[in-house]
Amino acid sequence: MSKFIWGVKNTVSKDPAVKERLSHLSDITFNYVSDKPIDGHYSCFKIFVGRKYYIAKTKSIQWTLQNLNKILKAYNSNGTDGKDLYFPLVKHIHNTGYYDVQIEFICQSENPYEVIKAEFLALQENVGKSLCLNKNKEPYTPKYNPDTQMHGWLTVNQYLNYKKLVKNNI
Image (cartoon, rainbow, N blue to C red):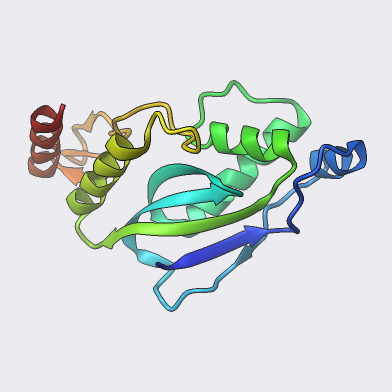
């Protein structure tokens, strides 16, 4: 199990001073603590905040960090509409005061179908459990882009294989 750790310090406090400090937190810091590559592979992972976790996929861990920080800043300054992928995670960080964030990889592959399959199976197994922050049992898949002739990172064939997997498992 590979882990990356993001964090400032562990805090599980309802203390108003901690809440105030957290409301001004501008960045989740990133420390690389794995012998696996950060980027270059598609990844499916669990992001842990304390014992709670969120299952996601990415092509770039660095992009994920930047996106988390962007949402955190928006949430802390003027709020957000709650539609962003990582909103439940950022809301949990903000509400609990616990902001030691760890990543556990479920799957890393150069084949995006393997990653979305791993995410689907992980969501099927975990959504509904009290510690899982995900609400949807199916991963997000982008709409077909006629310019690239792909569904996000998935080729049409990979997308159809994924839809077949969903149909056979629901």
